[in-house]
Picture 1: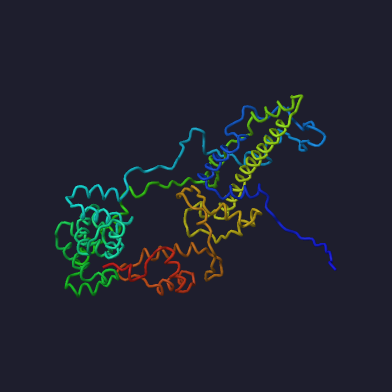
Picture 2: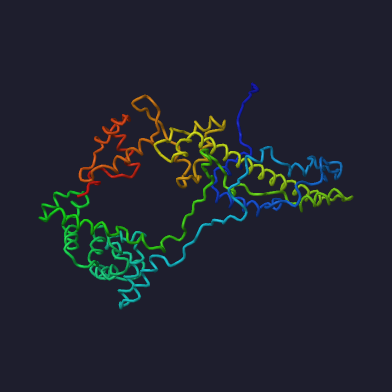
Length: 485
């Protein structure tokens, strides 16, 4: 026998409007502008710019449509004023007074020109090559990566030429043609490894004792050079420290990635648009939202005129009913989108305002050692919002400060205890570590153990492995690789 039971279950589901709001919040300024343009294209009931009138003259206020017949009615009242009514958020919270309509529009610039491989092919056309050599040379140029290297084995190239180009050749022939390709500009292009790349560049330098010594070091003691075993180099080549210093200076002037300097490689130059601006006015911090985050949108007047035409019509057909339902759908979507944008503005402003006040000392001084420990939950508790909302605001947005444009998520950091039991930001410790390494004697760089002792003396008792982790995060090499002669 079946038993029937009644169970209550409480579940939380996001409405389409809430999902739309979350997606809008996480967009940076440029992506947000593209989203608005997309919505304006898709929804004819939504228009940009100021409306001709602040509101409609109550033409359709709380009007209910007549029945089409006994069984078909439009159940929902359409109040056009509701679609155009002011939001509950006070306008002064959303106003942006640091941008005006005549401000310069900043757009992503595009770089024009030929690609790196095309640049090499154009040079190749100046050489006299037979048909076979030309095909091999073009294939080699096509194998050059963005850094300027050929990172494939010659035997693999021989096989590919046979299968794809129907060119049967040998490794010796490939070597011969490769030497021609390596004569192209920039110097060092088409090298198979870093050692060969540096040698190709040194060969083009004007002969001098330091260049000759640099060439010998790269050829015969490349491993000692990369590991900075300077004492072994001094002993091997029987030279003085000054001679070694001059040779190393020649090597350091070379380009390890010859292809990276070619401007044609980068077609799009990224342009960061700050979402916020923080200024110091009379010793106080002032936060403003980028005016491009506060577009002027309104419901189309043509759609409201369509409703007026429907209201005045005496005979209401089935097609008119379908049209009115379509109009209502578009008006709802337009109103939801406008509301979501206003909520986005408020959320961004409130969140950044909380971050600014939490890191007030830093924004007033610009000293990164003044950054306080701050996690997402700290801000979420202050503004009474979810952690995920704060994460969306901080993830990909920038703020223009008196000390440069900063990524907001960089202000967040974990905390550690100093020797006095106070919570300090890991950013503060990293900054002190960076300064300590910058001021060290480069002839005797500090090891991680010594760095840990110095930090402990300054009141930051952290382990050697933690120092190593922070050093790697700062992209600083180990002591041996920081050594200079």
